[in-house]
Length: 200
Image (tube, rainbow, N blue to C red; front, side, top):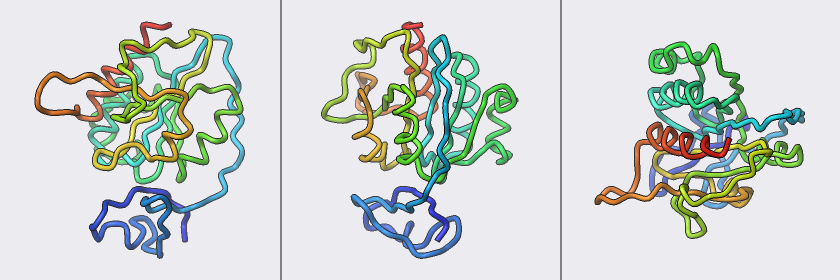
């Protein structure tokens, strides 16, 4: 068992075997979860607020590359890649990031929940972009400009892991006016990053 944590779609054969090591899986909260012990990461709090993004089980390398490019443009400092999210070692990520992977810090973590549990005690405020019953419109949020912020984006189909949502200080949504109720994850990140950037 390699300890990869990723979502399993209900009534779908995907997830019976780990996509990484093909080992057996275990189900927790209706999600396929591998448990692991992450080495304790010490994140030094900067004198000015740092904005970072956590991409949990994003399937599309094209979306990941596009988000890398946007993180650079909107002044985010770190991209945490979790679960099955492809890293910049993937050629498709590099193609759409247009070199942003060289200017943005990034790290890979198998288990996003354990990562966030390590970050919160170091003073990080954690937010998710998700349609959720407690979500507030992103334009109506109030963030302190002295706090380090981590924005979480989840899987294109299953959304943000419920355990991650339980660790969030706030959950935001982007209001939609048409029949479609969601945006492509890379576009959604750009909208959210722009709005959150108004606080700095």
